[in-house]
Length: 370
Image (cartoon, rainbow, N blue to C red; front, side, top):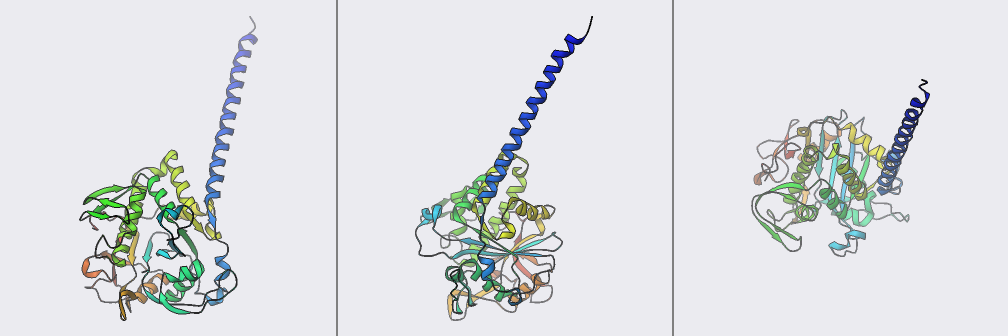
């Protein structure tokens, strides 16, 4: 008996399976593209800052392969941030100079004190006006002249060329913390602060986005009330956040990764060199093999300003030594901070080519830092 009638239904079934699989792949590819396009569209690009920085000849020499990224936490109350009160302008609530080594095997995040008294250079504004140089608090540069003025101030202070910048806002920070399921912290004592909406017990605990924002911003209800203590707490939090992303499986779970990417991209305003998923992924993937104990956080060495102890000044020659090490892409060693060494330089270690600064690494347990 001919076997044609048997093969025909089989061919029909196989054809339907092939069409079904094809449609499934098309739908999956379409969904992936829609997701990719949506994430790309989240990222805000600041194309103005670059042209306000002046000619290359007026700026520090570009690092040979290393990357220096200025991360600015803005306290702007615009848009979704209006829930945190009103403000006539925006200042850089947190500024971190992130140095990524040329070999991509280490990174150093240096917190720059917002209350430090510094020389703010003349800055060109988007409308073409040029501000007068002045001596004032570091974070006022962002209020007076935005990201460009902050970069010019950092470059004048450190002689380090800023290759990229990232501005993060309050609402986006909260979303990122929630997207990874919260971030563990460790408190040596309970904290209650109505202004920061914080009411936390002592000990190890996991903070949601709202709590985390209050935790990194609160000043007077935790520690000694200084901005230096707050910067140390922010560094501990970033260290714990890095560990949480690595240990929670977020990066390997698409259903958890997409909310994190959505939150992260929605939070960022970046320069054109980082304004797409491809560019951000390229930077992130280059760091994928970096050991967590070679991710270092510290505060630039500081001390009370001579004429007003409510303000800071950079401690010399220690601060310049740190900046020189970063310029030369040299390793920066840190020891755990203690109350006696809150200025960013270990009191037991004199300034030298191999100086050890106080700080923490990405592998340090959060409770060990408290």
